[in-house]
Length: 238
Image (cartoon, rainbow, N blue to C red; front, top):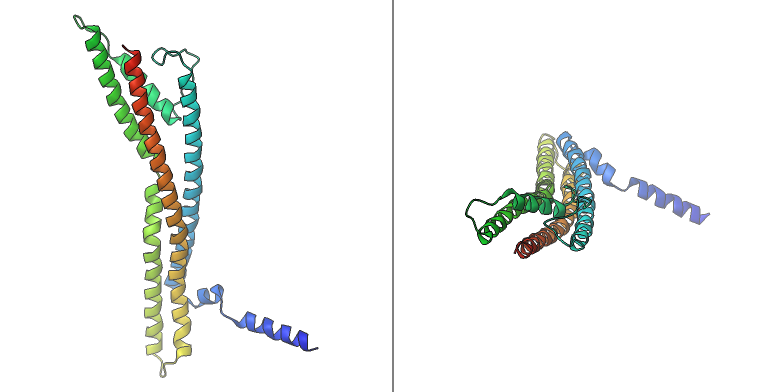
């Protein structure tokens, strides 16, 4: 008989204990709006992080596959028509731009083979630099949005806390007697916005740092491939 009574008392205490929903109900209108906005930003941040991770993983696999196919060619300047170099693959896009730039320069009257080769190689290197810059920007797409959430979410939560505390003290100041019981609910609800901001920012900052490291790795691999491609074209054109 004693055990059911203890269990019932424990459930009553647990039900009466404050929780996140209690704090949310004690927040002012601005605090509730900020919490909903932070929840939306959290969904966006997770969508960006997951999508960017899958995108970078897919691009790296496509790049490695294309690089293997390229090494199997007997001549990269005169690749067979069956050779597949889709633009959506960064390595293939650089290859297409380099080959197009190489064949764009035609021989001029009185120009030696060495002069033609030098002009073509220089044109290829310029084309690769431009393509490399464009692909680097595409790798880093969406990262600015994620960085904005990382830096802005805590301040957004802090705004809700300051606003809520200001309202709580203002309401208590209008009452005849100021007690802790009158002040505590408003302050608890105000602090919830800071907690929400940190819950958004903390996972986002880890995800941002990881994705930034992965992006730098892929950009470095892209630069190495562009350099190796320029060397292969220069050697084959001799």
